[in-house]
Image (cartoon, rainbow, N blue to C red):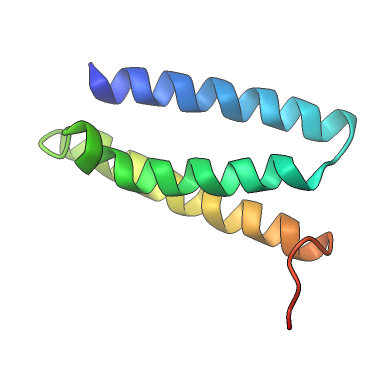
Length: 83
């Protein structure tokens, strides 16, 4: 149940952020995406659903993808300095 609830809440937040970004891109939306990516990676251990192997790997892989894409978006829009 923890895996399902986590996926539902994080997914809903990501949908809202994506819609907000379509309307008007803001840097804070991508920073929240980075936080959500880190949360998804860590959530199987924090919420204790590592025994559900498919749910654990889904959370970790989607967390890595979310983290990479949000970071790439920030970098490409100048939100992260290279120096």
